[in-house]
Length: 79
Image (cartoon, rainbow, N blue to C red; front, side, top):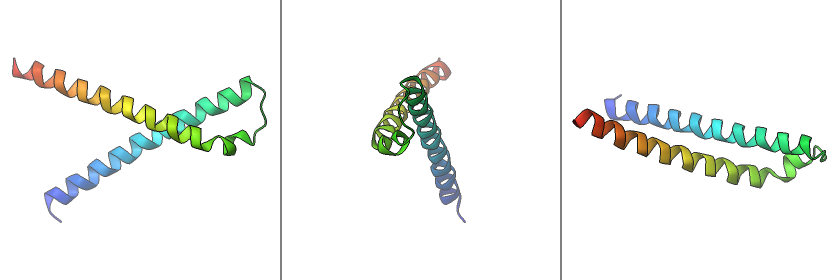
């Protein structure tokens, strides 16, 4: 196995973990909303499309923060 395929596998695994964490965070928010509104538990399934959209929004925010961090770190190291 070459170094490139090993690095690609590690990157994919890290990104899948980040997406999974975003999905879990969105699901937790959904559960909190269901409990606070005293809604039926079936909304865990019926609102799954909303949870997926919210998790993608979280993932986009994570990407934005990672890019900003990368740019700041690059500028900091450069000086």
